[in-house]
Structures are given as C-alpha cells and as structure tokens.
Image (cartoon, rainbow, N blue to C red; front, top):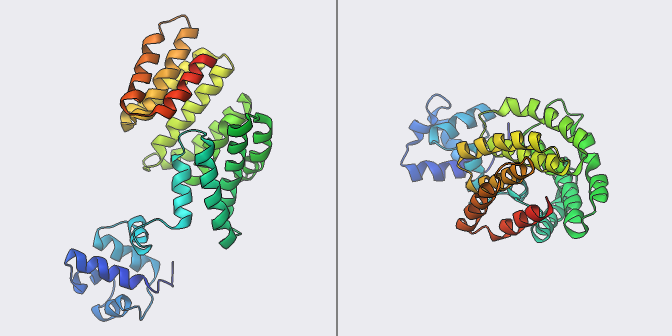
Length: 286
C-alpha cells in the first residue's frame, strides 16, 4: 500500500462524511487540509504512516477499511484465509468448496505461496475425508511442513496451517511441531486469533495422545484446552473438550461418563448436530 493508495481517498471521504467529521479534523497532525482534500479526490498519493494516522483518526481498523473498500465484503484472498481459519472438522463438502475457491483465486494469482499451501492442505484433508488414507494425506501435506519449518518467524496464517496438518503426523513429529509452533505463538499472546489456535492445537494433540493410549498426558492436555475455552467463551469447542476429557477419564478408571454427557448436551443445545455425530464416532472408536 505504501506510496500507492489511489482510489482509497474516495472511501476515506465516504467514512468521514458518514461520521460527520470535517476534513480539518481528520487531516490534523498528518496533512494540510489542501493536501488532504487532494487525497480524498484521488489526485495525490499518501504514504503508509499517514494513511495509518487517518485510519486511526476515523476510528476504524485497516481490516474494516479494506472490507468497506471491497464493497462490504472480504477480498477473495481474505475470504479463503478466514474460511480456512474457521474449518471446524473435516467435512468433505466444506473442504471441496474451499478448495474450489483456492483454484479460482490461483488462476489470477499463481505465485501466492500462502494460498498454494492452503490449497495443498485441503487436498490432503479431502483425501482423508474421502478415503481415510492417512499415509497419502500425510505425503500430500509433508511439503507444507517442510517449507514452514524453514521460516525464521511464523505468522498467524502459518500457525493455522501447522495446526491443520498436525494430526496427520506421528506423535513424536507432532510434539516437535507443537514446540516449534508455541515458540512463535508466544509472540502473539494478546492477538485476537491466537486463543482459538491454542485450543485447537491442544485438542488435536489430545486426540493423538488418546490414539497412542497415553491417557494421562491426554487428560492434562485437554484440561488446558478446557481452561482456554472457558476464558474465550468458546462453548462449541468446550463441548468437544468435555467429551474427550470423559474418554480419558474412562480409560484412567475414573468417572468419565458425566463429562461425555455434559459435552454432548452442550452440542445439542447449540444445535451442532454434525459435530455431535463426529464426537459419537470418537466415543465408539476410543
């Protein structure tokens, strides 16, 4: 955006007028009123720091600004990333729809490595959802892990990609990935997307520990996820966590049934019937 914001002035003007602000109020400390007027009329460019100050003066975020600028909707790229963040479980239809959005976007932006990675992950998850072929899914997503492991710093979308492929790897590799991810997550401890990411990582590791019959470690991991769910008021994930806690406790010779019932009741109350079917499968399997 630096040095080339032609066309943004009109959006800024629209927001300013909607809020009843004068040009003088918005331009204060950043531009002369004359320079600001030229910007609103798309007759001049401004640099990033000036744009940042104006955005703050209007009381909006960059995310909201670009949402408005794009006709009150996310760009194709942002829409893919946001939907990827929100994938709750491996539903073939949901995964295939998002894969198609990636395909269409990449026809226009062939070099977007982040979306290429997401598309590759979706290929692996679709194979897993269709055929249950863990080995093939792991082979497909392995290059993504190899690329991400070389980064000096992981950003939020990278961390979500790691979480999405976590459960495809053997437990020793998963624990290695977890430590790698947590080092980078620590930099984002107050960032709004990260608490859910921590919950998802703990939930995925719990399931892998259950599969490996390490029930005591799984119980500790899911207890951490439960605390985060309560803190974030994420009741859908809390319901799944309670079920997994119950599974762990049953294997540890403790009363896990009440936790399983509590988790299922939460999902029923929230009408999360697809997730309810998935946790029923987990209960039968483990």
